[in-house]
Length: 540
Image (cartoon, rainbow, N blue to C red; front, side, top):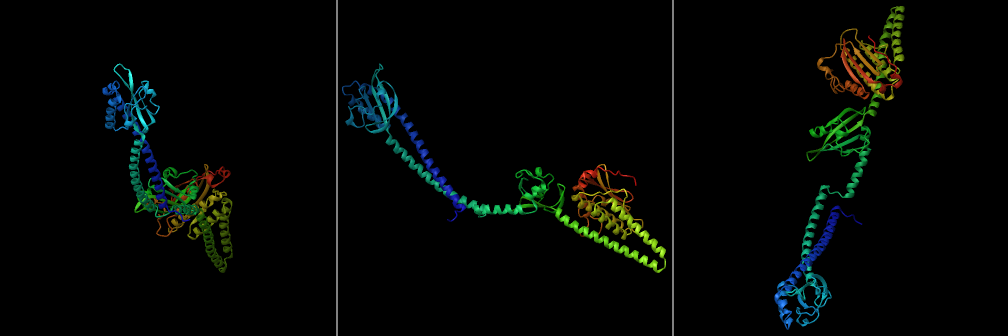
């Protein structure tokens, strides 16, 4: 069976409603009008009957030798003028003195509803007389002394009333037919307009598109939040709920109430998209795209898509660790190759004792580094990072030292990548700050310790300090005081991001160089037991 189109459905529904409405309207109005006619007719016949009953000629006719000869002409005159069906006057024995049909004069009144009027009552009734079913009024005729002489009955045949009602019904049906025609034209135009608004799609096609849309949105790994022009949420998918930790029904609510600090309203107002911006959301690093929604060059809302960078970051950090190990091996290879050349030269010169002393000194220095890393740094990833940076610094004639009072216990698994990023970037910045300086005695000190329930990382160098113009822009993404391009300028912004994730803060000061102190929430970095073991800060 072919599917009925939306326009056909609308047309048929409107047609059915219009037909039913026309039928009920005609029936109701006709019924109402009939009742109105009956009510007005009752009032009319009563008024005529009362007037006839007070007519002195009619009263005098009751005393004539032939009452019918006197009363009949008067009654007929009243009937014709009032356009009633009949005006009947009868005596106390129900004998008629007037009737529209002259042959029925002198006969008894028919209907049986006249008895009360013979007892002096005035009323209206509906009964079948010689002319048919009628509405008739009964009014007693009294002489001057109040003695009842007879009764006047004035009536209207219901068939005459029904004829008038049918005439009105025909008019109503004509009006209803015209209304129905107008309604059908309106239904046709409405169905076409609705079809145009929904791009010519049928309901089942819209339902299919909606189902496909929901499936696609649910399968997207990115979180999606969309708002309308009133800044109210119109769409939020499951991944967005997960990342934002939202369980309630939030569609229809202001986005600023649900996501404090969101910049979606700003994007909608300015029309300027924000592409690939990194931020911390619920202590999770995400990358966000915010784009205004436009329809016919008019901004009607905005949409934000964001994704968790933890997986990407984990992969990048694995690659970073490999690079760090490679750098460490390269630096060690270069350093030991130079030292082997020294040993080889001393041996060739016959200075065996000097060669032995050089070897012992070299081994003792390296052993000291290994001992410090092994005893004070229990996290393998951090130890490997520091070893790589120590060797890199040595290549640049920079002494990188981990203070003997430093302690870095085993970290929470989820905190390791952030600590690698924080320490690695701070040390790398210090190396790059000292490297261009053409002097000896360049030194970097790294400290990690627990104090006051906080985990503190401090990196200080003895360089030339910060340019005042640079200080205010240190943590801006993309800002760098170096001339290199590419990915330069994101190190300290990453440090700030990961510090925020771990509930911490950064302080930058100058003391014969630059001192960067990162204070973290100990409970987010270490276990509760480790946080209870404090190593108070000492004066160097």
